[in-house]
Image 1 (cartoon, rainbow, N blue to C red):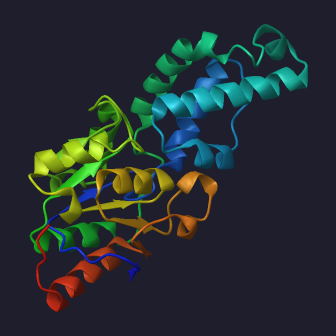
Image 2 (spheres, rainbow, N blue to C red):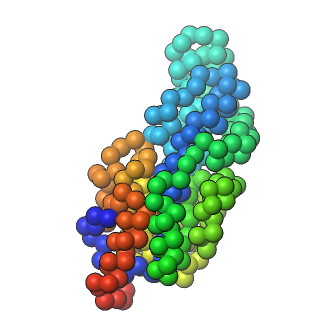
Image 3 (cartoon, rainbow, N blue to C red):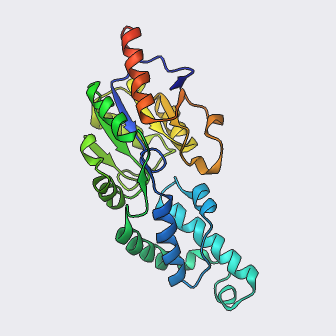
Amino acid sequence: MTVRKLTQVIDACIIDLDGTQVDTLGDFEVALGRMLAELQLPPVARDFIERAVGKGSEHLIRSVLAEQMRLADLSGGAIGASCPATQPEARYEQAWRSYQQHYLAINGQFSSVYPGVVAGLQALRELGLPLVCLTNKPLSFAKPLLAAKGLDGFFVHVFGGDSFARKKPDPLPLLEACKALGTAPAHTLMVGDSQNDAQAARAAGCPVVLMTYGYNHGEPVRGVDADGFADTMTAVAAGLTAQRQNQPRKEG
């Protein structure tokens, strides 16, 4: 783990899900593809999904729906004529119901846990750090995914995008997670993969480390303001282990 400014002793970790623990682009691609087929819209490109994911399923559906209706409209076909790109909101509820059905049916089947995640989570637990999973994904999607991938047992709490009044990058979810942990934000590390996670952490007063392999809306993650970057979850654990060995506790 490369660290620029991480000096606080860490008492707990808040860990993102998509793009941080599990590569879920395959799940998104399949569920969105089936949703769009039902709506008689063209399939969405994988790189568009990568750019759109991370701000919650509602944002993802609205972004994909608007883009695919725009493309259908440009094609000049019957679909474009009946579904002008200026009216995606009119079909949102239908799209959302379809997406929920298809995502829940395949949740976890086309996704994979990133290398080093299981060992890294285990190492963090062995350091005595309580872990929270905090995602913008709906809780009804997040909990089954964690269970399917054998990751649910690592976390004392799991919070989704519908657990609180606002989602990341708002600081509220991190502040509520810190309350649940009973730890100060300054001593609670956010581990994520995107600017969304970093902005939320900065606003909440939490240190933040970003994984280099995640999505970050299709942009290079090392350009984000963060305290450190890690190639694997085991590197995060190793960095915190070294920090504990070399630094006395600081209050505040």
